[in-house]
Image 1 (cartoon, chains in turn orange, red):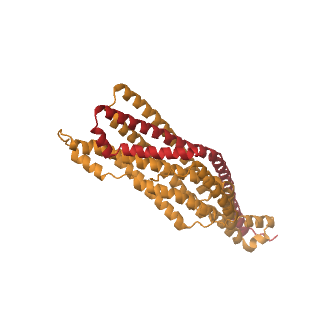
Image 2 (image 1 turned 120 degrees about the vertical axis):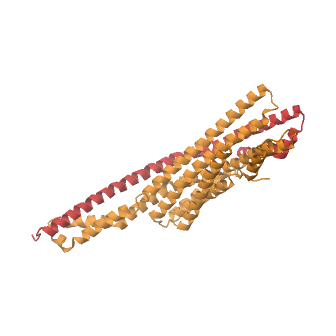
Image 3 (image 1 turned 90 degrees about the vertical axis):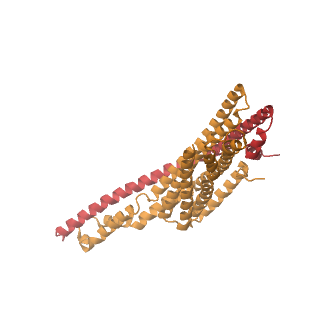
Length: 307
Length: 117
């Protein structure tokens, strides 16, 4: 029996999610603080992932439409007019509903992107070190006052208080605390969200693999094998069609990279929560996301050419 | 008793396999060699398999979409609290910038004026 990614029912998934959430909560309880810059790197990878996921869903939608059209054309000839009209209505209605669901998943990926963008902003990765630099300048300015300030006719305790609050350590700690609080409060829900994205992606991956395989088979039969076997004159474009069919590659690279990056995103999130996310982890995730994005781009341009 | 979700997933898997088999190059060739009436029947079966597949796939994605909606509120709440923290940090940043300017000014005044009172 072929495995296709649908294995593991919703019930099993829910149990797994609860287990994962419990682990994450325990993990956060004993969380080793991770620097804001690590949060920032992870969040930027998350934004890229959400973007790539949106493009992949676009691609899956186009492939689903094309495959359904291929199938409709394939079954058209033996049917009578009434049957064709009925087939058209049924195919189109079922496909439209599927496309709506796919669009919902896409909208959720957009929401996830907004979450990661905010996480990056909170980690300060949009304005790296700016706050720390200001704080440093402030501390230097205060220190520079030296002995003169001691003699100045204003409240010394106020200056001392300002100097204490302004240290870069305190600023860093504020960021870190906000990020940790965020993870502590919403971490399990975010992990659940990432897991659902992973499940959605697996479902789309199975759909894309199957759809592209079917379209390729239909094309090979209709444009290459049948004209060759028929007694009628072979079409002038037959050689070109055969070359294209044999050279065509399904977007396997994008699908594989997408599946890998979804799993890595979740792993990285757990590592982040546990304070053990390394730059190498983030690099590996980013590499998969890049592969996914460029493979989707390539698949899109290939399909544009073949149409 | 069979879990309805597991049953739905198994059906979806089987429909995928049926669809792939019926539309394989070999099967298309086989159908083409059948009499007209049988070809018509095969085509109706293929069309039905595709429509049912689309419906089941839609149902499967709908389940995920529903689960996502349950998480959505918490995701939005999380985004709201992060936005508040970002705003707080921005205000602090502004204060520190202003305070740095103020202390530079005091530093300048202290160096100019004879503050020996």
